Image 1 (cartoon, rainbow, N blue to C red):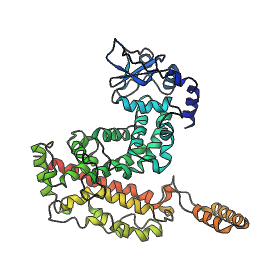
Image 2 (image 1 turned 30 degrees about the vertical axis):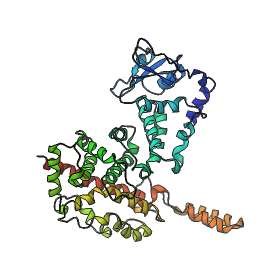
Image 3 (image 1 turned 135 degrees about the horizontal axis):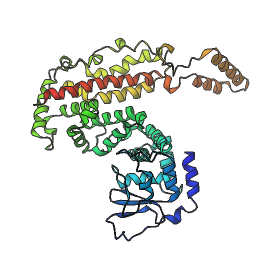
Image 4 (image 1 turned 135 degrees about the vertical axis):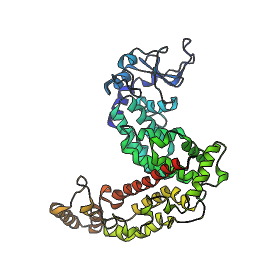
Amino acid sequence: FPKIFTFMSLLSEDNNSRRVFSEALNEATPYQRDPKYYYPDGSVVILVGDVLFKNMKFQLSLVLCSHNTNDTSSRGPAPREQLINSNDNNPVKLKGFIPDQFRNFMSVIVGLPSDTGYLALLTGAQDIKNHTQYLLIQYLDVASISQWFGMTELEKWARGQLQLVLRSHHKFAHNEWDKDTLHRLHSYAHSSGGSAVRLPVKILIQYFISISADKDQRQPPAPSNFMTCIELFKDETLKQRDSSLFGCVFSAIVSQPHREWTSTLTQKDKALLYVAQVQLTSISNVLQSIHWLLTPPSELPFFTRMCSTCHAVLPRLWRDTFGKCGNLNSSVLLQDISSLARLPQYYHSLSQTWGEVDCMGLPSSSRQPSTSRPFGIMGYTSSLLNLSLALASGNPSIMLAQHAVSERPREGQRCCTYYLPRVTTLMDEVYNELAGQYTRFAP
């Protein structure tokens, strides 16, 4: 974050003096002024919800120099003239965001190290102990709004922090989530700048759906979360935007006893769900895409193309996760569909346990050309030279350990890192087919 600190240092001398709170509202406008981020001597007025934010000229130049302000798309930034000529009576309207989200964005733009929470926001993602739902939402706000303004460097930074926090999604998936926040996460992940977080965002949302519909959780999710799942199910646009995500939430709702279906579901919805529950028994006779769940792990197409360590332990790991689905040919109501609703949980368990395996690295024939870095004779010679120097230093035990660590594969060369995304693709195929079944069940 060097650029952010450079910007902060330029503002630090007079930033505090500019934080003037005006209690009197502008008589000519119904909007209130933000108590922290409305600068009376600013030059750009932005309206978020019913709150006015006013920025200083230096902040305006930062924004204008970092993107093409002639972009007039519906989601793009306002034209230069509109920003320059804005005032309390004619503010630039930032649509699709609320004041608290814009405050998170402003806290990065004009914050100081002495501000409460500033350093936690700037550095929090670097330590897994700091990963929280709140921190993730802060980075989402910064990434989304900087994308709106075309501030590519700031968005890139925020997106990187978002990626780091998403690795700990299991820590806060049980927290209370609302449909709007999940929709914002999903929308950003599917924007042009958010593609790098598309897969981890989907993993988070699917895991959230799965545990929210599972009454056997050791850590019960927030009571309102199942209602959030129902709201996602009732979102008429979700099936078109992301059919696999719709299929996931469809399986979660269908897997529930009738008493769990709330009054927010219409009689038409409930009639469809009744039909689905009956039709989705002995599900191996209904869905084609579950073939991989019925296949022994030794017969999975990629099973033979991994290191010997992973090859030895994967059957056990698979048995303890996806193997719990059984043969998916049960005549017991809800049994098979409940297994499919738990796929995100099985994926999470597999990724956790496989990640702990002391992987030797992908065989070179399985690697993509871009990630393949053969050790080679030069690497081998260099490694031996370093080991010889270590032994000569008089502390061979420590250096031997360092040598062993240096030989471990990088993250991108681990078997689990390479193959787990393929498992998510197989899960998506199942949920896509379930989304297609929804249409068949519609009365």
